[in-house]
Image (tube, rainbow, N blue to C red; front, side, top):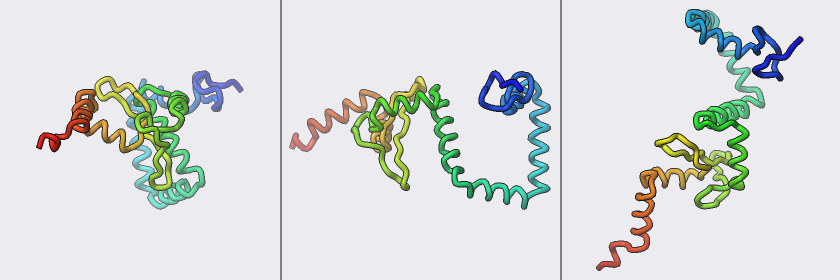
Amino acid sequence: MKNPYCHPDLPYYAKGMCRNCYERNLRERNPEFAQRQRDNTTNWVKVHKQRKAEINTRYQLRPDSKERKNLRKRKKTFASFGLSLDDGYKLLELQGHKCAICGKPAQIENNKRFLELDHDHETNKPRGFLCQKCNKGLGLLGDCIKGIERALKYLQNPPIKSL
C-alpha cells in the first residue's frame, strides 16, 4: 500500500491523502457534504447521549489525554502566529527556557511550567517568550516603546522628588 503525500506517516485513504486531509478537502469542495456531516454527528449525539458521555469519560481518563490536549493547544497557538511546533521549541531553546525580559525560568503555576508567546498586536508576528508578569506588564504599558520610556522616566525621576 502506498503512503499519502500529505502525511507519509499516516495510512493512505483516498486520492493520495490521509483520511483527515481527504475529508477536509472534501468539506472545502463540497459544503453540502460538510453540513450533512455536521447534521449526522448532531443527530447521533442526540440519540446516543449515554454512549457519548462514556466515550468522553474514557478519553479523558486516558493517561496521555492531557498531554495531547496541551500539545494541540500549543500547535494551534504557534500556528496562529505562523510558527510550526519545531520553530516554537527552537525559539524557546534559543532563549534558554527563560523569559526574554527578566531572565527568570518558566513560572510554575498550577504545577505547570510555562512562558507565554509574546507578539506584536499590529503585525501579529511573534517576538519571543515572556513570563506572565512581563507579558502583562508590556500590555499594561501599551505594548509600545513610548509607554516603557514614560515608565522608565517615572522610575528615574518620581514626582515626589519635586517636593
